[in-house]
Length: 633
Image (tube, rainbow, N blue to C red; front, top):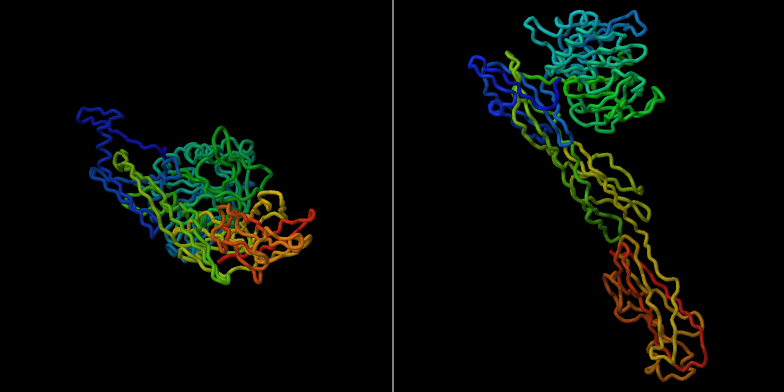
């Protein structure tokens, strides 16, 4: 594995008598010009098609691809192989407390041969033996596994890693899987050999308890290797990085490792695995899966160590072409979920190719659409059917790529220029729930592909509409929650005082009556009743032609009290149904005054009266005004 920055290896041109410096811009431009990369989004397949050309024909080249999404800060190497050859180095010590035991027998669907292996070498069976999910095994016919015991490998790693010509034979090396890794550690020379292998960019996967310096086993060389290449701490042991584990794992990151070649779920999906745990590791790389809680110990999750962000709660972490997975604690009692995760991880780590094209399934649409915007909610005349209108748009995920060429004769390396692209799969539809709960989250299943949805009104006076947008990659937006409240909510004074002063130039005075509509819909305000209740009776406004000349008896017989929309009506009236006062005599039926808008709209009513001025004594008079508020269409 190499660092994520781009490199340029300059070779002295001794035959020409010229020694080029490592900062030569002229050589950098020349090297970049021979290697050209293109990236073409494929929305229907949800991948980016990469193609590159190399005009340097002086020697054969191998290639590694590097990618960085808009959500990542660092370039990392990515998969580039369709078929993956794996060397499984399984622990085989059987005399220790942690010793491997038992065997597995199976027939490979790849070569049709029968195998009996130590149970700790079960990876070949998992990847190649037919099962109920796939007739070619969990490797789907893409992954081919050779198995070698750790004892044999540790004695002479080169004869297993390389062929007779000295070329590496495998795309990925996996150390695993058994609890404690049978208490076996790399020798110093084997560590060097594995490091040289990883330095080429080939995949390295280490399993449970390999990189661990626990009191009961000190895997110093494994831990040193992991610290250098897997972007984690391990040499400090349990006292620095407490154990964390459970018998399930939660997907925390979406990408190739969660959906290719097996689609195992979106972020938040719970996978069933045997009990496993971290054991003295602190991961700072990409965390793909974590444990939903810690049943292994009482230790808390830690998220910072030595000034670095990371976690001791991880089941699977990757960094470039190296990964650590906690498979192994169960002594190879792997569930289907765990075997699928392993297959995806092995595929992910195969990162060197001699081809000049690759469909990057790691380059996926990872960005959800915008949260839906609800523009209107309408209904039919009897309010049994409602229609909600809304809109959203999908968002693209941006990527940057470059390809690195390595000369197979002299090891010279150079990179292509960085190119950019973006991938957007487009809107698939909307997931909608209508219910009586304020915070329901739709499950992502498509309710409709239209930008409107008609539904039957639920029971109750109010309900909620919940809408999430979904794109063709299965990304789900944030949820829009919309309250439809059919409870009429109005505030107004309980009583107002009016006065008649025959000695004043304005003998009748009364304050306006403010009406505020707190409902989420417009409300029509009507007069349903108006009558005297004490002190004096009601009179028709047309009972006298000249109210100012009434006698004392006539004055005491009654007044005509009316109500109307105030001349200072207020901004909330959206319609005026009646422009003249409503008196008692007008109330053969309910009389609409006007319509108030929704959501806090306010408007004023005014009292008016016709009355005589010949009062014999002070009189207390009261009236009852009944208003009716109805929902408008």
